[in-house]
Image (cartoon, rainbow, N blue to C red; front, side, top):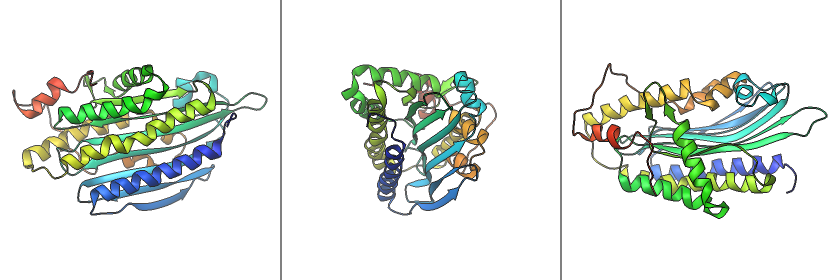
Length: 302
């Protein structure tokens, strides 16, 4: 596979969507993913799968998409101005899981591939993606497991990958207007074409394949814990931060909307219910205060 193999990437993404949906559906045990196939008039299409009102998952979406366009959107050329005037192919799997239980963290993952082409020029391609964890009532051991799994997935390619992608995640999933991270981070990378196509493809697959081993044990351990109205209300308040990030900062959301993507699939990441409360302040010494004081800032977890 010395050359760019778009068909192999597509095949991997569709198989990854299948395996993630099956694992999450099995863990939930009360609902199934409903599939919505769609076609994009400008080129491409996808499979959106959504699970709602499950035993453990209030709303979960796992989306595969493949889109083509005659010119790169503004969100992409602002990041990579040299791509202006090129056509593109973009594909990937993106998911967000919002559990019912406030003690079970929200999680997000995405792996993607871009090719930008121009007649008479070599194609420009890269992989991107990662995953991050957004707990409301964090468990230290869960956060360590999450990061240890990420570290182990990238270790075969060198110890430096986890360190760089972990910092990139901390920097990217940061709400500037709130001066806090979205959660406890994980991995984030973009513009990956290290060592040629095979190497870069393998790194992206390692990230995609490690999501379920990273997240499923955390969901399993926390999905049945007892909680009350206080915990539920705090979960809904903190979900508002998730909405703020996705609508203000998230590159994938901007890219999808600017390329005329399917809005229902793009916005499937939003929680089914979220609250905003004016000038909320957690009670000193409370579990809610602990989240702000110890978890919503970059930390070393290994």
